[in-house]
Length: 310
Ligand SMILES: CC1=C(CCC(=O)O)c2cc3nc(cc4[nH]c(cc5[nH]c(cc1n2)c(C)c5CCC(=O)O)c(CCC(=O)O)c4C)C(CCC(=O)O)=C3C
Ligand SMILES: [Fe+2]
Image (cartoon, rainbow, N blue to C red; front, side, top):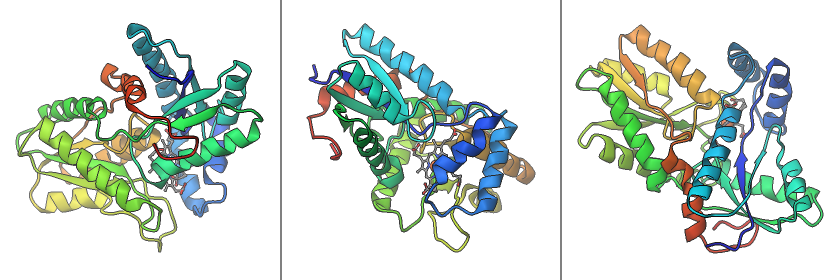
């Protein structure tokens, strides 16, 4: 089925306790133009959860779910896990892969989209990690997958479930991480988000009005980022007479801190203050259809050579 000899699960990384929070944030923001006040605020979000990001739990569980999917379909490939910003660091994982004799691995990233933050930055991570490890295996990133049923169907079920928890007339609000307008490949990111939102709305509740909005903006105030921001949009919807919203975190694959804090706490509080009924749709997480994606992408993806977009 494939000439790869390993699958690499590649993720963002997150802290696993209070002492990890500041070093993690320093890793994320090194060389980036993030105001100190924003960092302190984001640090507080992590402390509220004991300094533990949900993302590592996702990676451990997703790795197990992918291994189970491989086993059930006779795919005999080891699965490794490495992160950009926290342990297990990607370079350490690549070192271990090399020691295990791996020569050519396919990388499945916990981000579904093209665009710089969501794709290109992970290619840079791969290139940097390989430079650190002499004789590193070749690593091809699997293609972006925001158009695949394994990603869209779990979201559609979750959106339907969220609508079911609300009074009639609810609006679907899809949300994704904002990025600076100046970011490379921003238009591709937006186009894929729009298409994914449309596809999920169509599958979940045809005819229901929906919007695509952005969250978790972080740059300096004067710098333009993708808008509208979710909180402003909730105000606007309320002003337009909308009384219930189903919020679908289409820009994420699991309950990252941006989901459990920025949506479940911040956006939910804003909705409550407005008297807007609020339900947050679940993320694909370890849904078996999502965990099958690496196998499906492996079956369909040609070799492209390290660092190139498949
Ligand atoms: C598009 C996108 C995704 C989705 C794609 C993907 O999933 O990769 C994503 C994911 C994530 N972002 C995360 C965390 C952070 N991102 C930050 C900063 C930034 N994100 C950006 C964009 C994105 N980010 C951008 C343009 C910045 C500005 C600085 C820069 O240009 O790089 C900062 C700094 C503080 C702040 O400003 O918020 C933190 C702590 C975590 C881990 C969460 C957890 O721990 O559960 C995850 C999954
Ligand atoms: Fe981020």
